[in-house]
Image 1 (tube, rainbow, N blue to C red):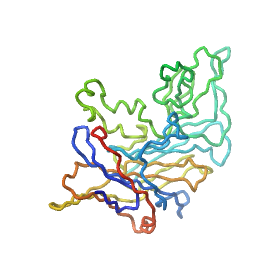
Image 2: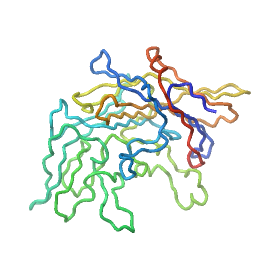
Image 3: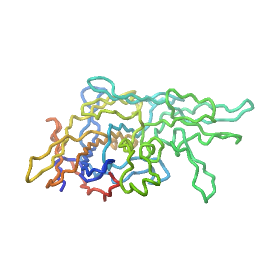
Image 4: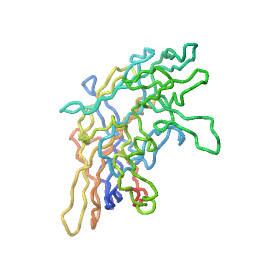
Length: 374
């Protein structure tokens, strides 16, 4: 039995880990709104009165499975690091149209910078074929660029034999620039989001997709952590996980958006040119401490801490009142065989208690589990 004493939606369910041990995963997801403070450049988080429920499955843009992932499911057995995910736009600053600029995210605590990532963005531009070869057009002036996989490098072949699957750029089937144009006449779309180290010199050169959003489970960087699902595994291992499965498969962020030591609360996230009309803002994470507790009739109870492993900053909506930040805490422990119930507990700073006590949640049942789900 799972009893949730927190104001946030959550669940606990059993699953098997890579060593085929029965484990218990406990998940709590809190949804927060941004609030201003007396410090001009600092925003803080307060619980959203409407918490909703856990995301039981991945959501895609326009509810279309052929589009990028917009929000990944909350159900992951364990994440060994903290994901930092941002959905939204890069803004030029003061609504002044610009051809290109740089935006970024930084996460820091009292000890220093934990993560820093920057991206170069531009207005729409394209490769044009001239006598002397391919040339990149000047970017159109713009005030914002949508930071999602559709505007970075990648793509798919639209025209193909119906009897065979579409060919795609595996790391990002949704982007611009792939496949290279070859001998085809221009124009040919060019990606609008690049890493600072990338320079576009020819449409024939493959690039690394760059964005702040979710990396799909089908991407090579996640698939290579899923283990060897070969004939031997099918005959002797299935439905358990492959022996070389890596729990890092469950990380939904790019490798350079993961923090190896889980966040603890009170960290500062700085957004640079990611908010309209504002050059940069700092966001302070709440100092919330969440715990699981296994209750027993015939032995001492077991108490442990849930780890903050996902920070999802969702600023896509044009209305700032709809902006939300989701924080997910999770634990995975050996299954508490013989326990009568699992409880989720929350400790909050005194100035948060009124807000934390006035939320509405949608209760979730855990998904149906099989040994392979662990």
